[in-house]
Image (cartoon, rainbow, N blue to C red; front, top):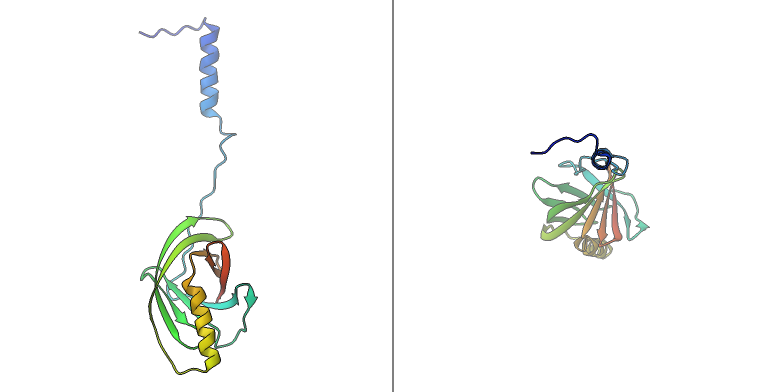
Length: 157
């Protein structure tokens, strides 16, 4: 049977050391947690930059709608509509925006009779969109990356 021995200074020192080590919180910094941001169903985003270059802001500028519940990413490119199946996996939460890994699978798209310039713009936009592997979401911007390189930047409409 264990007997408490207050007269043993070594035992008292070890007990105090263990107590202090267990209670010390100075070394442990609490990392704040934030609820992950997800685009609201039906929330529309408008393209503002492709590969870091600002695009014109008019009614022909591509739009994007992410629906996490349905697992879709859809919108209108410069001329035609598009739909992708999307899977999102939260990578990291930050106060300045959450990062997701994404996987896109082209599902469908509408094909309208457009000018050659609009068709070429569609092709460039959809080619970049199909390469997206990551997404950063803030309350006002949605950025798509190919690995760590920003390829498409959208703002909330």
